[in-house]
Amino acid sequence: MEYFKFLNNKNVVCLEKIELESIFEKAKGKKIIQEMIKNNITFEGLRHDRRKMLKITETVAAELSKNKDEVEMFLAFDTLLDFYPKGSEVCFYIKQGFNPSERQITNLADLKNIIEESFLTDFIIKSLNEFRSFQLKRYRNELETDNLLSFIKTKLQYYGSDLGDVNLLIVLQSQINNVLKVNFNNLHEKLKSLNLKSKGQILILYNENVRSTVINQVYPDLTTSNVPIRESVQKLWGRIQSKTKT
Image (cartoon, one colour):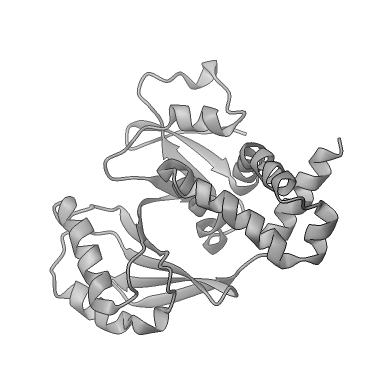
């Protein structure tokens, strides 16, 4: 596969979902095994007790959440790619001076070491022949319309209220996850009244009752898309267990 491409006069590295899944399994599989040993939990026990499985997963996820780059990568391939056709890729700008012919990507450290810290773009989704750039922000405060609006305005002001063609993706991660308190129609109308310079979309992503992942576009239009949450946790455990037997 051709990993490296050219976009906006810069080199980008693009990987499919299965490739990023493999990279993260290698990086996080060891940590999962360590947590299982520490809690005296076997794979057989996990298969019959979803609560234990989620407990171990949440512990690893809490560690992952401390690393901004890893969170962006994980959300991009594990969640956002589900809204795009099969074969879509996640791309990242790479550092200037990097020679793609001299280096291969074999693990998470390799990937993180070549990614350029972009002012506007955290990651890019390549779908068919189209590239869509994203700036990701995590929202952890109370889920209420005015609070969420204030958060979005603050983030936009940091970029001069102009992200160009970059889409602002807000991921809701509040402890009290009651998204029903957010009036998305009201939020949409208030954002339209700001006369923003940005051409990109403002998107709100959240988990709906552990059944589906939802993306609400609140600017410039008001739309809703959702996909069922895959049984990715069980599949991940199965792959990790099979690799420990070899």
